[in-house]
Length: 397
Image 1 (cartoon, helix red, strand yellow):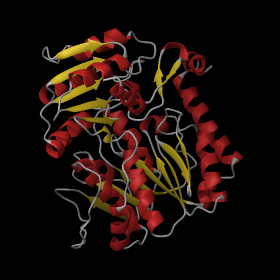
Image 2 (spheres, rainbow, N blue to C red):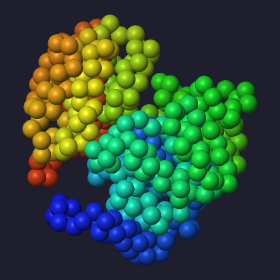
Image 3 (cartoon, rainbow, N blue to C red):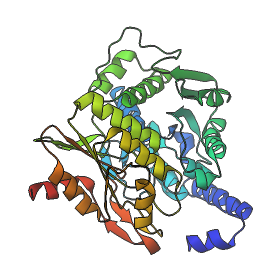
Image 4 (cartoon, helix red, strand yellow):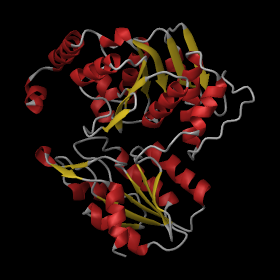
C-alpha cells in the first residue's frame, strides 16, 4: 500500500499526506507534547547513545523519563525493544508514546529524531523544548537529493525548537545550526566550545572519543535543565553500554565486537577506537551495506576505509531489500585492494571470521548492531541477532 502511494501520488501531495497524518495523530492523542518536556536528538551518528545518556542524567536528577530510540521504548522503569527497524516511528506511534509517557507521570521525553522522520513530518505537532545535534556527515543522500538537503532536514528540528539548542561545535557544520534562533544555546566539543566541566572529573565507562562527545551532549542537556555537574557525573559514571554499540560479545581467546556503524565516518571512528583501545594483532572485519537504493555512494568508500585499518575483510549480505545482494558486495569489494573474502550468507561470514581469528585478534561485526531482522525483497524479514549468531558459531569452534 505504501509503495503504491509513493508511486502514484505527486510529491507535493505526498508531503501534505504526511503533514495531515501528523496532525491527526496529535489530535487523536490530544497534543501530549504540550504536557511533557520534549528533548529531540538528531545527527548522523551517536543519536541512540546520546538519548540513553540524557535519560540517565535526567533520571539521576529525579525526573521520571520516557525515551524513544532505535533500540528501545522506555517509560519510567518499563522498557521494551524497538523491533520496528525505524529510528523514528510513525506519527501515530510517536504521539501515543508521548501520551503514554504523560499518563505514566513522566516529566521529560527524549526522542531520537531522524532526517527521514523529519522529511515525513513525524516531528510536526511535537512541542520540542530542547534540540541537540551530535554531528553531521553524508547519509541518505539519494533520499534527500544531496547533502545540503539532508542538512536542511536536520535543521528543521532546530527551526521548530525555540527554547534550547545544543550543538557540537567541533563539527564542521555547527555554524549552520547555531544560526537558528533560540532562547539559550550551548556548545560542546573536544577542541572548542563555550561549555566546560569546571574541574569536575567524569569517569565514563564507555570507550571511544565519540562517546565523550555523546556524554558532553548529555551534560549540556542536564545543565540546560538546572541539573548540577555532580549529578551529571554520578549518572555518567553508572552509564551502561547500548546493545549493539561497541558491544563485546566474546572476550577470549580473541575478542568479538558488534557495532551498528553503517556510515563511512562512523566506521572509521570505530576502527580508530578499536586500535586505540585494544591494540589488536589484527582486525578482522565483517560487514556489508544496505540495499533498496539506500546510499549506494558509500559502498566503495566503506571498502576503502576497511582496507586501511583491517588485516582481513569479509564482505557479506546486510539488508538487500530489492537489490541483488551479490552486486552490493561486489561494489564494496572494488575498493578493498584484494584483501577481501566475499561470503553471501551472513552467518557463514561470521563463522569464517571466527575460524581465522587467533589470540590477540579482534573480530568486528558491523552494520546491524542489535537489529532484529535482515530485510529482503517484497517485505520479507529474516529474524536476526548478531550477538546470538556470534555466540552460536563460537560454540561450534
